[in-house]
Each structure stands twice: as structure tokens, then as C-alpha cells.
Length: 65
Image (cartoon, rainbow, N blue to C red; front, side):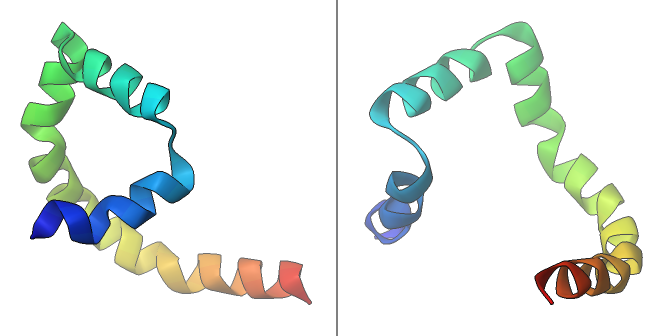
């Protein structure tokens, strides 16, 4: 159920060749390392994202005006 529900998002931004290249990357040593630590690094980055999000939103809003 999950894969069909997210497919439109991936189709919007990536070609089949893009996805194949991404999969090849994740089979490399650095890709495996990134996959292994992505959850932990995302959790560690979360406080910074929360801190900077309002500032970035303001910059985006100013740029749109």
C-alpha cells in the first residue's frame, strides 16, 4: 500500500533513470553509510531545522512578494 501511494511524488521529480542511479549510489560504500546513518542524522538535525524554519519561511515570503 505504501509504494503506490508515494509513487506520484517520485514520478513528479525523478525519471526511471534517476531512480536507477540513486539505487546504484546506495550500493556504494558511502551510499551504504548514508543509508545507515540517515535516520540518526535526521533526528540530530531536527532541532536546527525547527530553529531555522521561521527565519527561512520569512526569507521565502519576502522573496515571493
